[in-house]
Structure formats: C-alpha cells, structure tokens
Image: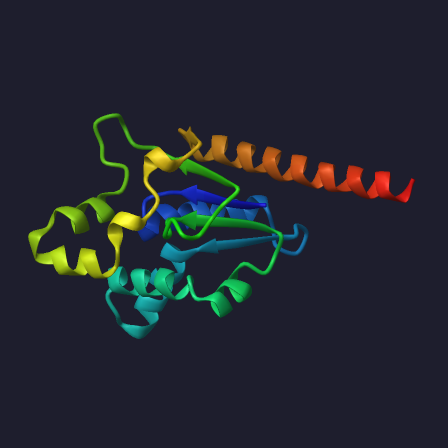
Length: 170
C-alpha cells in the first residue's frame, strides 16, 4: 500500500513529520519504506551548499524515472511525506493540515506560483502538477491524528494479508 502524507514542502514542517513517523514505524521492525523528499532535499542542499527549492524539484523530477521508481518504491508498503507529482500514484492521499483556517497550506508552493520572477521556474518544474490539499481523501488536523491513521491503515493492511495466507493454506 502506498500512502502520500501531503504536507508543505517546507523542510522543517515535513522533516518534523518524517521524524515522528520514523519513531512510530522503525524500519527494522516494520516492512515499510518511508520517503520524505523535503527532508532529503534539505540535507543535500546543506551538504552541497545548494539552494533548497531547486534541489527539491530536481529530486522529485528524478524520482519519476522508471529505474529510480524501482529503487525508491522497493517495498509493498510505502509512506511518502511531503509532495510529489500527480503521475506518482498512491492508494491513499492524506493531508496533514495544522494551519489555521486563514493560513496558506503550503507557503513555499504558493510563493513559487505567485512570484512573477519565478514564473518560468514554476512552468519548468511543473508546479501546477503537484498534489493539492483538495486531492487528499482525508485531511487530518494534528500529527497525533496522522500517526493513529497510519497505524490503522497498515495494521488493517497487514491483517488482511495474514487472513489471505491463512485461507490459502486451508
């Protein structure tokens, strides 16, 4: 099962969600892959002394390559935190929206769309093809709601696999 946890591409916001999801689902004990492009892009931009936003978009564009897809999405159960292009399909898109009603969900994306100087950049990186809050099937208000939701989704998914294996062996 593939789940997109739609968050702002702000690396601090997405990175905090990533840290909390990793704490909830340690990789060794759970067979889930967890990706967070904003966190990875921020780490790369810091290490290579590059700008964050172009690094982020380069990463998500590269992630769409077929060979890269096989490497990144190498587990049956995947959690992707942040945002990516709509061509990347998910079984469930859930948004974590901890903003107040009058706040913008993703100020980074909004700035790229609104800034006249970034018009060509926005077109080149296909910013309009990213997931939007409206694309989420469920919008959750807090990280605790998200963690509970993910636990339920993957517990249900693993229970159904166990039942299928039991039925096949009978």
